[in-house]
Length: 111
Length: 117
Image 1 (cartoon, rainbow over the protein chains, first blue to last red):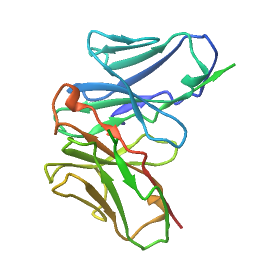
Image 2 (image 1 turned 135 degrees about the horizontal axis):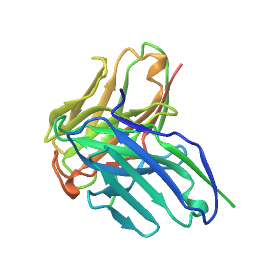
Image 3 (image 1 turned 120 degrees about the vertical axis):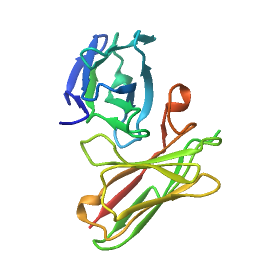
Image 4 (image 1 turned 30 degrees about the horizontal axis):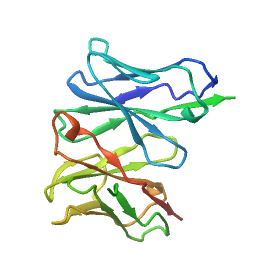
């Protein structure tokens, strides 16, 4: 079983739409959670960390449900520039230093 | 401030050859990690080094090795290249070895695209 599982999509949404991505992780001891964004043939870049209380950064909202081992990312008012692959990332304290990445969810925002 | 820098950006090797990839972390960062990203997949952890010592190793064969230098830069070596080693190799730096907080976050370089033919 993979450490982190994501729906690969693709998600094709019109500008202005709201879109949600989900991610599940297998290790209940996981302690740190992130969403990274990766543009085509570029390196992943940190979008936001995910905290237990949930957190928001502009149009982006991340939620964590530890009981269900589930992470979500909500993008409101989608822009063309949001088109990218979104990677769910989990870090376990018990494996020390390894970040586990999902396969990514592809988003295309259509004019 | 400069981000994570990697070299070379692109390279082509033939099966059986050896390759060395280089990485310089963000200034002040002491931890360097290496990841392999095959097309259509997320990055897979190869190694982490902190203060010049190996602190973590992923599920990769012994053909993969790495080291960290006193200035915290790092090299990843892959011997006896296979076609399946073709991938984007990403170096990531972070402030801390592990733990919570902002030191926990990893920042990637632009990567080295390796093609094995």
